Length: 604
Ligand code: XMP
Image (cartoon, rainbow, N blue to C red; front, side, top):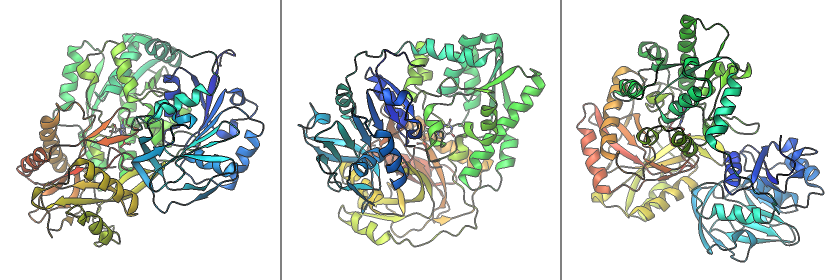
């Protein structure tokens, strides 16, 4: 329940990937913020809000949305800000028009802002912002004026002249829009907030919530060894006492080289007790045999975690007095389609149906479910966990199982692509060549999932145009070519050499090869502080000499919601590619240069 004296703004959640991130940023700016589905905004706390923010969403604006909001916004005279889908919805509601994107826009985009506009007060006219949309506003409502534009989006922002209504086609809430916080701050300053909100200690709040959620149950936790699970473990111990916390590390066989043993050594050294290990490699590999579809692999891995857990609980004989604690963080829930209107991007392992059924029965405790990665690290620091542990790169629960891309050997894949001529034309301007690859990976475009092909690009004689030109080129390619959602570069010239797509499944042999390549690359780039996470992916593609193709995907991020490309030194990249080739069975190394969006950090 909100205290009646606290002034707050409300985010209406239309299902955008960043709806809760908006609330998070608003709170970071000292204003309390609630999130609710738009359907519930009437007659509740929503319409007492000092301001409203309409989030992004995966769908196109329909008449139904317009009617729903017309009803709800009638008589609402306080400030309203529409973001992305919200920007388009408000434009339609007040009499403007929308069009389906001739050109889609995902990732970094330069815009020209009017510094006299209220949202851009104090900001320079030229800004870099993060876009993710297909539709756009093609005609402004009467009495509205454009306050920002980009080359392909004339109404990237607007304001109404006679009422406090604003729209931003781009996302001010993501860290990759550097002026975004100031824009949100300008909006909040129009909302007449009397009482600022100060967050209490995260540690106290999370521990109290966990204690209440646990009741008198024993907490049972699967510890992967990553930051999220170890912070969760520490929270559980502080909430209910070490005697009521049991934990299990499952060695799925999908871990990195030597990782399970390292984790156990580390936990023992830190004095954690009641941790057991279950060696379940044979079970996981048996169930994954012959499965190529990424969502099926995710579902199997998630289900097996639950099976191993149930078996363990049976032997522990805790009866009904236990609950499962999970280190789920906010982005995991949202990408799994976790809010009412959100689209499914991918099913995170802690959201498979078996777990969902336990959640519905009140058997799951998730202390970190409202936090982003950077907040988990801060909480870890408040809890006194060692910095070296908190700085570890994130590693997904399904592990290398989703980094080893498979192919069933049957599903036909085209060997020529309609986008190829445009790709070549675009690259020729920079002296580059490229080809679309016969594999697919997951991406997120305009709050919706995409499953498309990557394009591989190479220079002649190892010559590259430099990172700014390369980034701009990758951005243009993924925005303009409908069939691709990623761009990778090859430090080696590929010429006319073709890659053969072969039947590939998750096997010990394939995992061992991936582990060796992953280990080599991580040792070489581990000390680059700008790199937030660097997945290594094996593709079901094999070069003329039989060597398998690998991808290195280092990203710069803060919260995994958006990510930028790490501009590696091209000489170092060529060296890494030579070292990878020396590993038996390994061939070419590609380097992923796709921002998120439109690419996700992982490939599956
Ligand atoms: P994406 O690929 O969605 O990843 O950009 C965002 C972050 O989430 C991690 N990730 C997972 N973590 N279970 C997890 O615990 C999963 O199923 C999962 N899938 C992706 C990913 O490594 C990145 O840090």
